[in-house]
Image (cartoon, rainbow, N blue to C red; front, side, top):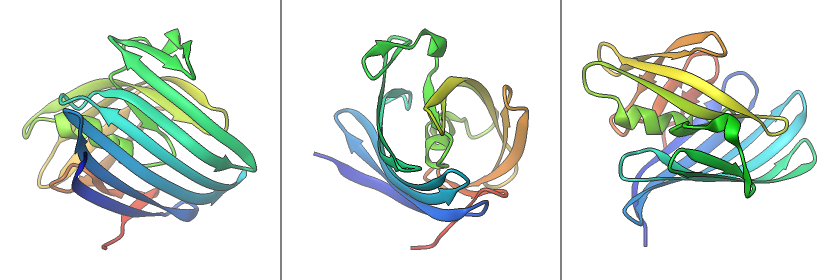
Length: 184
C-alpha cells in the first residue's frame, strides 16, 4: 500500500513537453512515479518512470518504459550494496552511485535534495541516464543550500552549474532554461 506524499507538474522550457510525478511512501521507503511527455530533435517521447528509494533517500531501483523516437524502451536499473545492474546485467561503470539521474526529468533531483541539510552542502554520485540509448555513466553532483528555497547545483562531468528553486517537498520548481513548475 502506498501513501501519496507530494505531487509535481512541470512544463519544459527547452522543447515542447511536460512531466508529472507523484511521490509516495511504500515498503519502508519511497517511490517516485512519473510520466514525461515531450518532443525533441529525435522525435516524440512518452516515457513512464518508477524510482524506488530506501528510507535514506538513496535509489534502490528504477524502471523506465515507453516510446522514444519511435523506439520501444524497457529499462531496469537496480542497485544492491553499491553494485548496479542494467536489465539484469552488471553495470560496473555505475559502481557506488547513490542515485539515478534521469536526464529527461527534473524529478530525480528529489532524492539528493531530500538528503541535503538545511544548512550546508551535499556531494553525491549518480547513475546519469541520457537519451537516446540509454547512455549511462557516473555524474558527480553537488547541492549547496543558499538563501530561501534556492540551491546551487553543480554537475562535474558535464561542467554544468545553475541555481534551482526548490519547494518544501524537495521538488525543483524552477530549473532555469529547462523546467518550470505548473500549479495544479
